[in-house]
Length: 157
Image 1 (tube, rainbow, N blue to C red):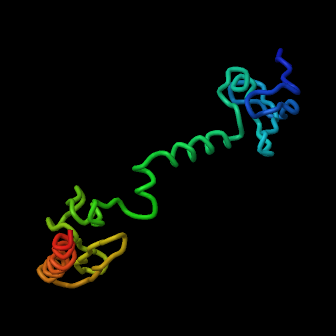
Image 2 (cartoon, helix red, strand yellow):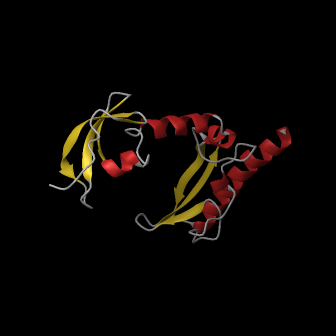
């Protein structure tokens, strides 16, 4: 057995070392079983404890992320739906993606069924999601939906 620093009963951040773990890290470092302040048990490499790399079971990272998210306005506004502009229109309904093969935003071809799909998302829900055998009909459906939802929104602004 190699030399190792006994970390039993020492505290590292939120972790209190209980005992030496039965496993050894891939690199040969000794591992320790620790009890986190939140109640979780975790096995951590001794080096990570001593150098401050690991200070909790993961609860500290989740806590910090949650706190940061509460104060990030863009993050808060994006919760619960697709990314939308100030009018509630999804960016996916306004911008032609690189994957678009038809050349028309909101119109795609489904190889499996052999149909064209016309789609439009407004305020996080599909207001148009219709399949047709004709490309021209799908484009027409999409343009009608744009007129109805986009122009109606512009008039009320």
